[in-house]
Every structure is written in C-alpha cells, then in structure tokens.
Length: 387
Image (cartoon, rainbow, N blue to C red; front, side, top):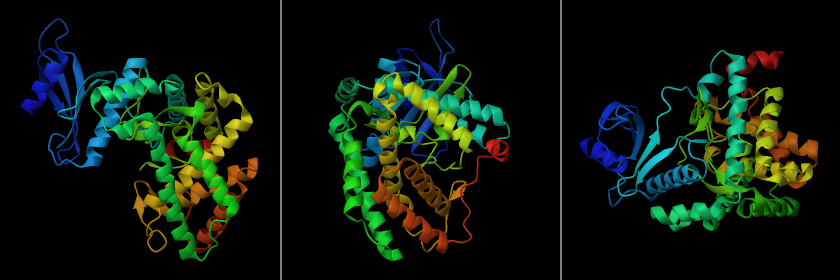
C-alpha cells in the first residue's frame, strides 16, 4: 500500500494518505479512497483504482486490455468533456496499472434504485441514465482521432485504435454465429438460410463500419455502473470501452441489459420513455439518428447483434441445465431477449430472415422450458407495470 500511495502522490504532485479501502482483497482491482495531506487543498479526496498484478511481466493479456480500455476512456472523456459524463480522471500510471478519479462520495448506483421500493425515483434515475448515455455518445461522435491519440500516448495495445476496435465487434458477432449454429443443430431446427446469412452480413457491416454512429461505447453500461450523484448521473468502470456503434449501448435497457447480473425487465411505458430520452440526446451529435427509417434499421441490426453475440457466452449448457446469473436465470434472459427481438422485427418488418430464425428458436425453447417464466419487472417499477 505504501508504494501505491507514493505513486498516487507523484501523479497528484502532493502527498496523500489512505482513507479507506473500497474493494475486497480478492478482487482483480484494488480500489481505495485517499486524501491529500498538504497544500491549500489538503483534505481533498480521490478514488484510486489499480489493476492487481498489472506490473508483473506475465500478466494476462485480458487484464492489461481492460486497464488500457478504461484508462484510455477516462483520459479521452476528461479531455473532451471533463467531469461531465464520468468522474474526472486526475492521472494514469501505465507502468503500475493505476488511475486516479474524482471522488463522487457515497452516491448510490442505479441498480440500488431499480431493486428498491421508490418507483418515481427509480424511473427518473433511469431516464437520467439514458440521457447521460446519449449525451456521452453525442459528445464522442466524430472524435475518434482524439481517442487514437490517447491510445498512442498511453502506449496502449495497437488493437485499441479505432479501426481495429471496430473490427473486434464483428469478430464477437462471428463467435455468436457459431454458437447459434451449434444450438440450432442441437435443437433439430433449420440452420441459417440465404436471407438470414445476408442479413447477418449487414449486421456485421453495421458494427464494423458504423459511419456517423461511431462513438465511444461503454459495452457494459449496467445499472451497477451508473452512479446517481446529486449533480447528475455518471458512468463508471469502462474496462470494456472502445469505439463502436452507439446502439451497442443505447439498446441496453430494451434488451434488457445483456451483460449485467442485475437483469430484470422494464414496464413498456418506462422502456419507451427511456428509449426516447436516449435518442433525443444522441441526435445532438448524430443528426442521422433523427431519421426514423435509418434509426429503426440500426435498431433491428444491433438487436440482432446482441441476441446472437450473447450465444457465445450465455447459451453454453443452458439446454441441459437451468442456472442463475445474478438475479435472473439464463433461460429467462434468453427467452426475453428473443421476445424483444421478435416483437420489434414484427412491428417494423425488419430482418425477416433472422426474425424467422428467432421465432422458431423461441417456440422450441418455450416448448422445452414450460415452467420458465419471463424476466420479472424491476421491483421499484412493478407498480407502474400493474397500472
């Protein structure tokens, strides 16, 4: 800990001492609160996050990549919109895997609000989150040259440069397509026909070449990564962040929340309000999002992306074993995501080939899992659902 405090003091240019440790000892990141002990601003507190084992030569590539993604995002956002969308970053040490952030105090997260009992507060916090996410995307649209400059300054892996980062989304899709094919065969269902394959090619193009929708995406914008501070919502934990299609994040509440342990459903009226709030903010930086047809096409393709990409990590073993992840079963998640995709595709007439695949898969899984209930509505919003 002494070495950590010394490194923080060097970055801040003033000595610090430890206030408290915020992370558990066995976590991959050490997170502590420190305070300055000298100068006119003595007593100012900061949050310090260090990747455990980052300075070990044989540290895992994934561990290093997560650090560099978060550090790059922190510096990038602090440079273009300091303290507005995320806690301000006050320094990065790439030798030690160390970052220093503005301290937001003991502000609660969005997960706590959704799992609590105050419906109006949960709804307003959820809408504020959607606005913040849309504003972050609007602010970063067309700014990937600055992202690439920060990648270079930090000495981050070349794969984080914007052009290579976009290709990584297509690679994730390809992994999901393989998983989907395996499941269709195991279920005895028809494989992907020519139309579905062509639509998947369009999905691949959307995520690898997003055009005006190219922004910084969080890729894990879950309720527990959303801090509801008194002066506004902030996003934290950008370990998966990189350039990508805005709707990789923008569809999170509707899907719902594909990478999150705290996954429940939103009432339809709340979902519509959240989607509208996000889109309204996005339009400020991505005016193309105001075109209904263009936007619906993008929504259908990015919904397909998340539906299929998630097969690689959530669907393995789910046919033979019902398991729980966080507050919901994996089976309920898959059924709900299929229902969301099919419902949107039916309303808009989009991606008919993939819609047919999803409909057949949904019907077969519903038959095989007769006792599986769909995702529940978040506790704080259940009164609105019944109303």
